[in-house]
Length: 388
Image 1 (cartoon, rainbow, N blue to C red):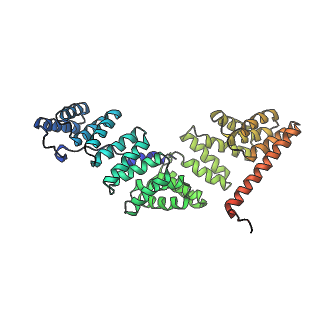
Image 2 (spheres, rainbow, N blue to C red; image 1 turned 30 degrees about the horizontal axis):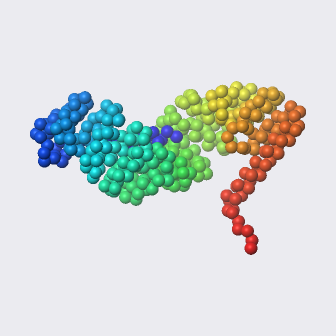
Image 3 (cartoon, one colour; image 1 turned 45 degrees about the vertical axis):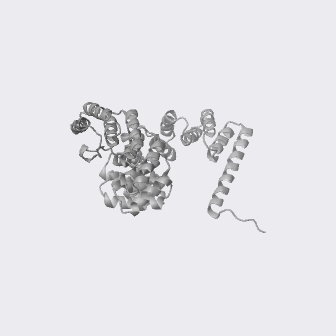
């Protein structure tokens, strides 16, 4: 889902500046430096970034220990995408005034913009040590953890904000998305239900809630949410696919195919939607159409094993045994071993009269099936203690 991009836009604010009147003016700051800082602030107000940069640099040359003005200079650098200079200025500000939370916060934001998420995390943790109640710092720390795919740690930060009654749409969205990635679908649904109550007209929120409900085996409720999302935004990416997939699992092939087709009109490069259309063609016995569609999928995603298996199965139905073997031999070499591909390859070898090869593949498929059965039994029943 693209909701994390929405989250980033919601939480990632440009680093803030001090107004000159708010800065702690050092006792030995020359009047000329103060005047230059005021001129720089005025240039910032009219978005004249080069002029602001020059005046801040001149002010700092006259008052090199003025940490707040270094933070302002870094903000101007960020506005001009001068990331390295911004980092250097903020590091200097933090060294001059270690308790200046804005220096650590803006350094964290700047690192985040540079995709240096571990560094961002370190700076934001430092900011929290100074101001544990700083909401923006904790939000951005959670965002950095999400970018690092450390969803468990992100949830800890976000739930702390939630417990303190900070339940804004960005926080609820971040919680819902993080729980989805952790496969804690009931918790995801709980936070996302709250999100749709707070932002009932947000199509993306309904789409995410549908995803959580679908994974929590509440298929009818999920379908309702997917339909609401599409009603609010008919061109919302991934919404038609989500609805189509939910309908496909119910066996409603006609509308599912329609939804996958509509998704491809919105996101033409979505190979998953094309793959599902090929599978529907195969289920309907439309093998020519299935081969045509699945061949496109395999061409776009050569390592997508399910598409290779489906194409091999379709070719086998058409009697194109040699080509089916070629495709299925590719499939069984990809990813984790899985019984279906080996079983299909065994059938293809049988059709080609290659009995020894067929027996080998059927044996592999049986062994993999037994391993999967034992894994599932262990997951359901737990590991049993041996009897004394």
